Image (cartoon, rainbow, N blue to C red; front, side, top):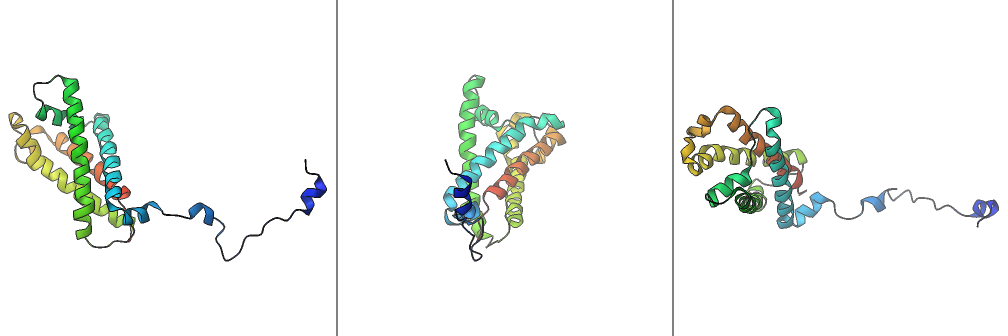
Length: 187
């Protein structure tokens, strides 16, 4: 055990003023730099995170008076219309996850590069929101009416009520905000 005298004679290392004090904590790649160098992986991570964040929002929408949006169930009903609810949901969830990753990769690898370089997170989030609003519009305009013709959804799915249409936009807004924050390369 060290005595008081031993401790008093030890030298304390002095920080080099040319080096930042927290260099050891910030050394290495940050996520935006990593995404810039690995767009495929960044797109997959962003897509997976965004899809699951948006899915949770879809399940929680009744808490704010909007209808529950369970896209896994919707896809399962399309793919396996005569199956029981549980296998229908699992099949729909697999397909829905695949779809979400494809859309995220399409954004990351095709749409994002077409929009030019960006240096700010706010612009990346705005780009993600734009992509999400395009997908929400396509969903209301085309996907819901064509996949569920028995519902007679009408133009922009307005026959199903404004709450459903708003819910679709809120779901896609959650997805697009997550895409923008997670797929945030620093050019």
